[in-house]
Length: 91
Length: 377
Image (cartoon, rainbow over all chains, first blue to last red; front, side, top):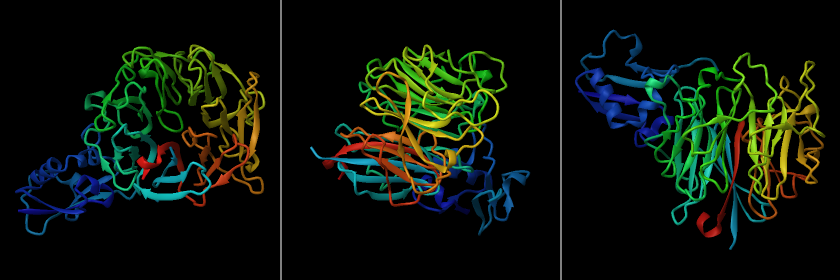
């Protein structure tokens, strides 16, 4: 199944200049892993040294923040999207 | 051979490259490059037969730091794959790259990076890959390091011009360190500095160096803009003493009332420049007058105001620690950028000043670079 991934233009130098790309995977977790394998420069911008998501970075699976999902081995469905967002935290 | 003067302006919204010929009267403004990223540090690195390289320490509130390089003087950029990063087990976080400094001339591919949280990284391949010089973060005083107002930032790296094994590093609210073995071990060099109220008891650290400039002809002589005054060392930072005569005292009501500021820079002709602020509490120009001070060269250790940069207008601005620089041309040029985004330059030892006709975002760094015409083309 294909997952559409959207990244902010600021991070497009991690993804060969693209802000929209596709990852082939069976589950959300697998897609995330594959995304970071294919575009390893993204990892340092999404996760801190302790391997936790950066405080002001949000990863949305369709309309849900994946931080609140109980598991990531969700089977992907047609039309699924993963969006990297900067958390709005004032200003 | 004809040369080009370049001024690299790191801002809170990207990098600008100002270019001129040797006369430095007309400036071409290129950028913004790396738009959207803070550029706290930037270095122009001569190629020695390879294309000259720009190296930028970029950071973002949400997306963190990265080192990016350009081999065409800013037109295109790429992020390096093995940038500075603390190991997970260290417990440290890398928030910004505050300083990029060239290695000793005998090690032309070496570049050092000073980062926040305070630490130091080295690249031996012109910025492509970085490893931590971890003797600093393993220093016995490390548990006593605490951040100042600007964070726990290692902002100054100086390499001895003839002895590549000797270097100095300085971090805000911590102090000065020196290595004599190429970074394998460090010792504190804060004797003579006034302690500032960091609230920490460790006597070895807790000294708030803001920026240090090296005398180009005598590397035992150094000048420091300190949180509580201006200091000089004539013994390679073994000891420091205040040199504040001629400077306006801090107007805060409690002692010590020492001159406060951030930026300090020296020229190849041994001129040293300062831009003092009102006080540690009021971090803008006193009475709105943008005054540049220069150290007298008569051995008196006395400062004098040489340049009233904008005599007809008030400028209630700050000049940050890396936003004052001097180029290597003859006569040398002096440049600084303000927190309100203006760049000024002088070609007569800081006496008269011109303004680059542009308004940038908050200026974090101003660095100079001189390239031969055919290389810069």
